[in-house]
Length: 445
Image (cartoon, rainbow, N blue to C red; front, side):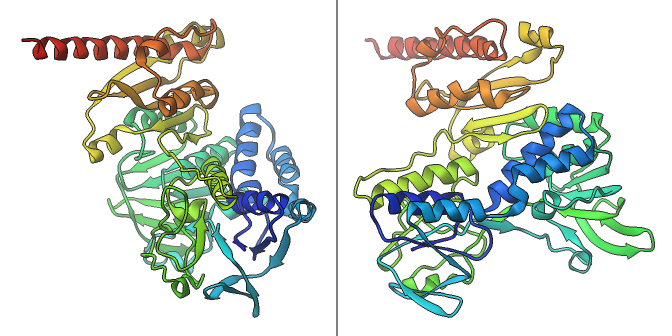
């Protein structure tokens, strides 16, 4: 029994069915989940249309075609072809080995929870009384608000700010933390902030939302710093939380703290559960991206088919598909500080590459982070055109623990932005080699 038919659920269900297992997939919304209908596909489509200078009407037509106009008939057909039984409705565990789907009980031997995540709505006076958008509405409706206020400066908020500003909305972003993309290297958020300001986006950084009230001409938002914003629409992009409530997991002995993910071990099994219970995707709270969900699903599938496999999250990319793209992988500086890891940092401005001169686009920078103690690359961040493509080698290097001396000897095509990693890799390799030599001299009698 696979509970939740999103990215992870589809992959697990189809893989098990093709291996000869009797599989049912429970989904109360759209088979396929958020990504193809309300997240990755429509947002990247709109961002591309914006870069191409298309009209809003052209962009909507392209978006709706790519999302299949939010019909999951093709996805359901794929499941049927694979041999999966699709159960439409809300699923809830009734007892060990029993699940109820809209009042009808079904039995199961193995349960895989893939229920995804849901938007978090901030607690603010009046916010519950006004019409709100989440990314679902922002990426599916045809409206183009004249004035749009976005609550949250994370990846979703930044992408949608760029989309709507490009098509003519007056956009403001409210982010209490003081900078965009707070989980990533500071330079990445600063590069994106510069571009959004250039597009006319009003960034209210360091101010939280106080209260919201209706006006004759729309909505007025009062901020914690005393400022105000007027809007026709408010978009909540203040993060997401794993969808774990109402699933009846307590009947399996599983207790989940509010806002936290379903705890899994290295094989993506829920160790505290009674019976064979697994989880993959956003519901685990481990890495909330479509590619991470696919990775966890493959781990679950392998283990359920009797081939032990452990997940390794050291090199899961995190990408904000704005222009410029922000790409991060591995440990960020803030995360390293939390873990007590001493980082050695080396960076390079993309403006120094021939590719930037040829393409007349000098925006961006790359930074690489090595663990001083181990002399290995453990993290990286980049802001620049197409960074999601030319930074992939760094993800592989982190995952494979490739020696810095070997990475520094890699030749990149000229002229490309990929050349930008060469100088920082040489710098890190030389520094780590010098540190090893110094350590050796200290140890010699």
